[in-house]
Length: 265
Image (cartoon, rainbow, N blue to C red; front, side):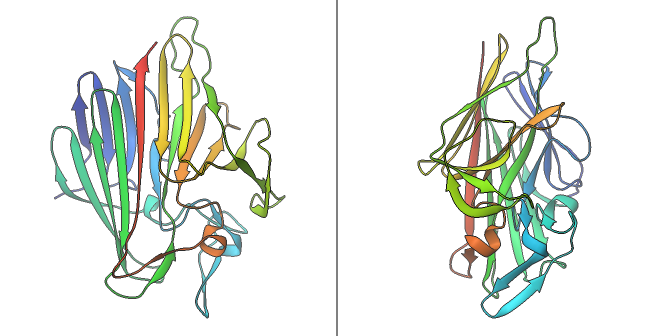
């Protein structure tokens, strides 16, 4: 199939998926109101085969050290798939499946599959990395940019509510130091630990409540921009290729799911 944009609908919810622009969700509209920041770099993009920053762009697989391009010097950030064209494997009115084959600069062959399933009050995103060849460490996650304000008369900025077991202490290089601290007040560009699963509530007062959930235990919260806030479930913390590697093998893919559930206020 082509990489043309895909529109999913269910009830008064509408999602636009852009295979040709990093396999991202470029829009989520509920009752005609757009929840995601617009623009080619925004929406919600997949972070794969790593999430956040990888220190100095280097990671190790056994005794082999690999160097990735430094797209956020001095680090490599957010994987390679967000900059690639994905292939549409199948689509229907409320579901789409995309695939992307890992290529250079990622040093190992593999395939990433994304599934988007839209209901009247929820969007479920599932991603998997598999290989039929060499095993390798990987991470995956999602980077949504939710609009800080939904607009309208007397619109208030979004409120974030969550309870984390810990916060990864952030060094001056924006990477976790390896020390876990008690959660601190924002603004944040920080990774939090939720061992019972990610559970973050975004509330636009008087308009909409949206819950981001996942069985994964790490979430990065970023709210330092004026236009949007980010709630990013992922399979490990930033620099996780080095500190919390998840091994993809021919027998065991890396899989994760996040669900966004909303209700009108």
